[in-house]
Length: 172
Image (cartoon, rainbow, N blue to C red; front, side):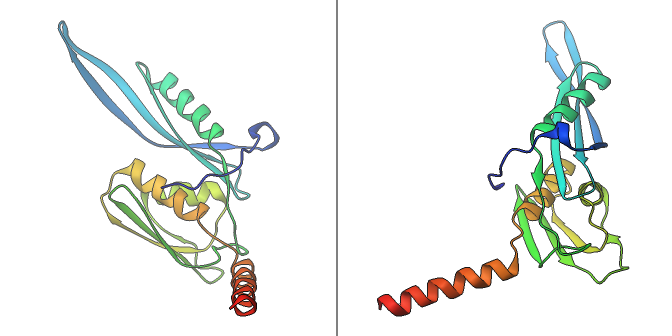
């Protein structure tokens, strides 16, 4: 499940949209088949802000614009450690599972498909990834974003753990 994050105003950021995929869908009605399109877009400023959006419409351009607007509404701030992520994490969304691992400077983005699009939009330069489970592009992208938003600063975590241990020792 994706973490609840604070709202970010997209008007203050210089955002770039990337189209991950367009899906052609049909609805069977009495008169035949109705065609429609669903678009998945990732938007980011390359400086720790990223969002994913899905848009559906009868025409491709309007589906893309709806997805872009949805992505701007769902922006998240990502915690980074220089040009990589602070720690290793495995995140699952649906049947898609994504492993995000920090990498040494100069490694580059070792990822493919929708994982790469999300990471590039975030501004991450060095990372190792592995996508496991299903290959559904929407779920893989959401798993990647979920993993990035679930990142915690190791120093803050250690401080919290130490303070809770001190409280237990004092109380017990």
